[in-house]
Length: 229
Image (cartoon, rainbow, N blue to C red; front, side):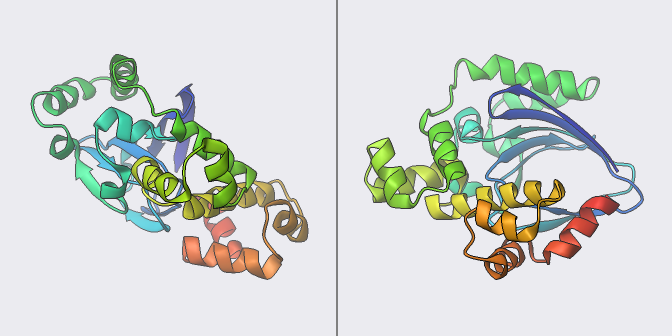
């Protein structure tokens, strides 16, 4: 499998992946929406609360835009909560000529076309500033009460806004961000005891339980999959 990506704006990544002989991969939750093209269909993949397996034919090339920090709901005009764990044809979310026009243009130059589409829509549909703020707070590991105090919202109101922006509440967003930080540290060969302490887990057993709950497999097997991909 080959994979490459580049950030085209804060919270927006243009990526391309071509599957190898193994056509099944584990997609980890990341609080993002993706607009993607597989050479045949233009689809929107909603945020995942837990990992899911994805099957595709060997040699399939996917080109996509990954929207973090609330960019997806802003550009598509839909709550992320409605899309959790689901995939839609873009035409289901954008009625009228916009989806067919993008699909017609994307065939010749997928990456360039998706990049231009984002540029065309970003100014008219700016991201909710709470999205980047809430994501930054989640990365610090602050509790929900502290996040609410920092943003000036009640915990209940912040929960509703988080559901719209990310597809799940503040606490689950924090778990997902913490998982990403832990996996990044493990891949840098940081000892597990230091990973657990540095990422806010109570101990290594807590780290192991959260990895299994969010990814459906063990940390050892997850790293083996990653190395094999």
